[in-house]
Length: 281
Image (cartoon, rainbow, N blue to C red; front, side, top):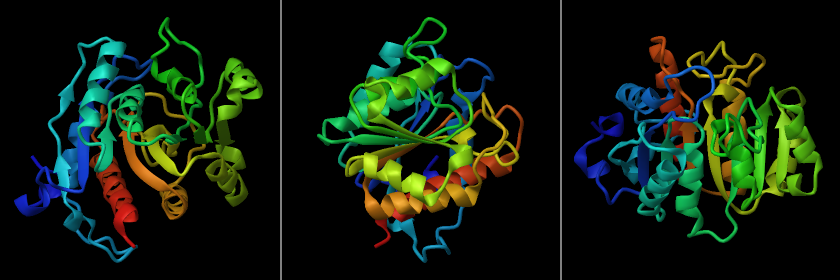
């Protein structure tokens, strides 16, 4: 299967965009099903229109290659992240799109790309700060992804509605200065500008689908009330692409346990819209 059922001339390995699906959910802590997310999103992409009416652009002409899915459900976190990083590295010269999988897979995507960028930073959309040092006896749990990334990268987090006190204490510490966080209730143009100013020129964008309000995306393992809307997300994304060199992105934590085809379709559309924002001049 190809993303959007694209013809061969627009879906080969020479394409400017690559999508890497990863089935993995070893590190989830509540609802299951994230390993099935990539397949559902790709299936839903078959219904997308080639033309994006918002930006008057057909991004598919840049070529979108769907790489072979990595099935890592039986792997321990360190090995899974290594495999993901090695596979991502093969495509580091392209615009990279990763599909998870639980949020820990972002560690692998970023590791695979950072060799090409000395100043790579990470912008995360998430209902949770994911700044715990460890959780369930693992530093690679999905509740720790932002903390791991902040060790080597500047990190921005947008849309947070749930935190542990220890995570706030980390933010208040000297080590936590590598992170700029915006809670959902304080979202504003000024706050977003502060986050973007904090980040370097080269940015990887990670979208945990629980950043959306559960009325829009219900199929995720740890939903939180009070989330962001579709239009809030794409408005912020447009600003990111206007001001930064976005080198790649991922969509994670979509767990299609209950069949709502509209959700998978919306996430497929978000991917295509992101590709459009990257290449529309």
